[in-house]
Image 1 (cartoon, rainbow, N blue to C red):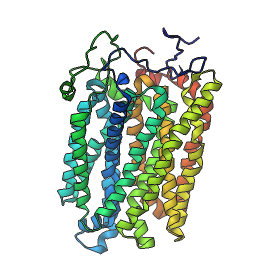
Image 2 (spheres, rainbow, N blue to C red):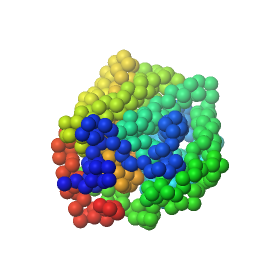
Image 3 (cartoon, one colour):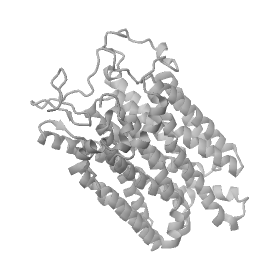
Image 4 (cartoon, rainbow, N blue to C red):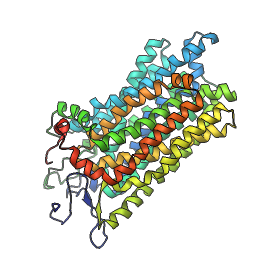
Length: 501
């Protein structure tokens, strides 16, 4: 029988939670303390404000990651010294700016997450976004290829911290039954940063050089950094307190300190650094990582070459190519309800059928939508370009892929957070880091893949890989709970076990 707390709440160690009473009332998980400084006790409007600032930060982390790709040809021409005959050679080298920053954006979190767990979120927000601001300016002023490459590598490292800060902040502020919808907004912010960055960049290069994209981005990052410094308090909270301490509400000025002076975990930074290398071997985490890697990898691959593709096939300017990403933005918007409220509705349906007990796997059937739309989007993009069909065909393909990335990634990501709550930070990093490595391999080989196999065959193969990975949600739904419990007994992953398990 599952253990019960003082309120009669049934809770297992690996994600099984009683979320509703027998009368159907929602049970608050985690249980809030009596301390008014507990983020779970903050007013709902202030929680939403912090969530909005957080999501704005997540949007900006990908704004400059992909935005300048709309000017790929112009950037390549500059680094080719204005010699158009060298474009064929230089374009793949310039595309590397964007694929390598996507790599460091994920792998850098292996360093960021232990520091966040140990010292809190606020100092890492300020440090990472300050570094992001500096590297954005650097990327805009340099004229040397090697310098630009180093700037992009560091830009990815600093901006990537937002990817692990965002989910943690939302988990700090909201109860379990609220997180699905809030994480859908987070996923939209991360995904829409690519679309919005490309659209805005298209407008910028109408009358300006591509460097202005970085300067506009730096101005937006600077404005966001001011909001973080002056309006965003620490959301990490030590739940070992019983509420008898800290009952006086902190003053505004005390919340502006860079460090609270508190250590939020007794675990060593080394333990938290190596744990993701074990977490990735757990079947649910590995599968969710593959979902991220395929969708993000192929999305990055298409976004880093689409400007050249549309210029070649449809004679699109950078501005017109940027407008094409409005479809991707719409796809991301539609993914919010499909990945959040729809996923929650599906999970609630199975929870009621299971007498109020929630298993993390209960949200997975909602992925049925993306099992269809993701492969279809890749095929439409390849077939549309290869056969020079109306430009709306490949644009529809990009839009469907964007929708699928937002919907499927949100569901699979929240699934693993629910399943491994006590080590949610390390689960996040395992996915982000290894997603970026696998995604980098997929996106870096796309050009040669298409050159050797042809556009239609290559995109069809990508569609097949994506469909296979997403279809694994079916066995995960039926046997995921058993896999979670069984896999933690594997000798190779025993070092990932956490206190209290």
